[in-house]
Amino acid sequence: MATDTQELQLPTDVDTATAMLNDPVVLNQWLRAGRFTDLQDRYNELTRPPLAEQITDILDAREAQNGTVHNAAKAAMDEWLREHGALTNVIRPNLGGTEEAKAPSVSNKYAKRIEEIGFANLGDFAHEIWHRNPVQNRMPQVREIMNDFSSVEPAFGGALIPESFDSELRVLELESAIVQPRATVINMNTPTMLFPYVDWSSNASGAGVYGGWTFHMVGEGQTIPTSETKFGRVKLEVNKQVAGAEVPNELMADASSLDGWIRQSLPAGAAYEKDYLFLHGNGAGQPLGVLNSPATITVAKESGQADDTIIVENILKMYSRLLPSSKSRAVWMVNPTTFAQLMTLSIPVGTGGAPIALVNIASAPNPTILGRPVIETEKLPALGNEGDVLLADWSYYLVGLRGGSGLESSPHPQFMNDMTVLRYIQRFDGRPWVQSAFTPRNGETLSPFVALGERDT
Image 1: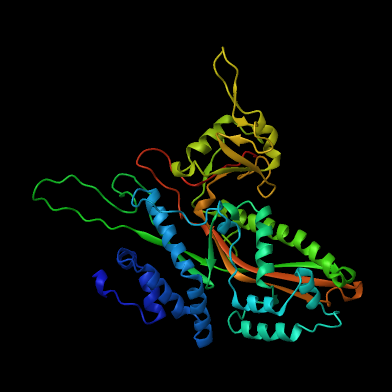
Image 2 (image 1 turned 90 degrees about the vertical axis):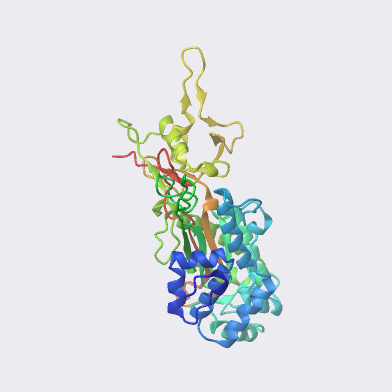
C-alpha cells in the first residue's frame, strides 16, 4: 500500500476497506490528504447490497443534498480539532440552537412519492390504511411505492408516512425532547455511518497532546523525534424503534380527531423513549446511553455522607470534573426527587456574611447551578441512586437519524374489542462521540459527561 498521500488508492473489496478504516496509520494518511470521505464512501458502497437501482437512488439523493452528510462529517472533525487548538474559524454542525438542527430534513424519495398521492393530514393518511375504510382509493398507489421501497429497506415495515407529515412529527417530537435538540445530529443516507474523531484521551507526560503530538527540545544537528496523530471512528448504525397503540374504531373513523390525537400523543411518546435510551441504552441493538458509557465520569459520595442526600461537595466536584470546553454548553439534569436537597445547598461565608445559595432560582421555573441550566426529568434515577444528578455537554453526543417513518394498522389483536392496533416505526442511533474520559497533564480525569454516584447503601 502506497504511503505517499498523493498515491492513495481506493479499496476494491470489503475486507481491504475494513482493514484500512481500522488501521490508524492508514486512516491518518487519508485524513492528511483530505480524502477521508472518499474512503468512507467507498466502504459504504462496498457494503451495500449490489442493486443497481439502490446505488442510483443513493447517488441521486446525495447529489440533491449537495453533500450534506460529507460536509457534516468534515465540519464535525474540524470542530473537534479547533476546540483543541489545531484549527480555527470552524463552525460546529447542528448543536441544537439552529432551525436546521430542530427540523431535520427527512429527504426520502419514497416518502415524497407517498406525499404526492395527496393526504390532507396524518389522520387522513391513517384512515386510508385502516382495514375498515370502505373506499381506500389511494391504497394501490401506496402499495406500489412500498413494493419499490422494500427492495431498498427490506427490514422496514408499515406504510411510509408522507414526508411533510414525518418532518412535522419530528419537529413536534423535539419540543418535548431533552437530548436531541442539544446533540450533534447526523442525517444518515445509509444504514451505517462511520464518524471520525481525534483519539486524544490523555495529556499525561509522554502520552502526547492534541491527538498524539509529542514535543521535544533538541539541539542543533540532533534527530527530531517523529509523532503520529491518532484518529478513531464512531460507528452509527440505525436501530428500529416500534411503538404500538390500541385505538377505538370510532376514533379511527374520524380522520380529523385521529389527526389531533396522533399529533399530540405520538411525538411526545417518541421523544420520551428516545431520551430514555440516550441516557440508559446499553448499545446492543439500541443507542448507547451516557450512563452506560465508559466516557462518563462518576463522582463518588463523600466519606460519611448520609444516604439520599446531596451536599455542596458533590456538586462542586462534579463541576470540577467537567471538560473545561464544555462549561459554556453543559446542562444539569436532575430527578425531581432531588429538588428539596438541591434547594438547601449553600456555601458558608464565615461568621460575618450570609451563605451563598448554590442554586439560583431567579429565573424560575428554570433555575441554574453555577451558571448552567437545571432540567428536571423523571428519566433519571431517583434520589440516592447513581445518575440522579447528571452534568452533560450533549454536543459530544451523536444522534443519527435515518429518514422515513412508517405507520401500519391491524385489526387482529383487538378484533373482539372493536379496536385497531396502530404500529409506528422510526429508525435512529445514538452514542457518545468521545470514547473515554480525558487525562490532563495535571489533575483528575475530565469528561463532557459527569454523574453523581450512589448514596443509598
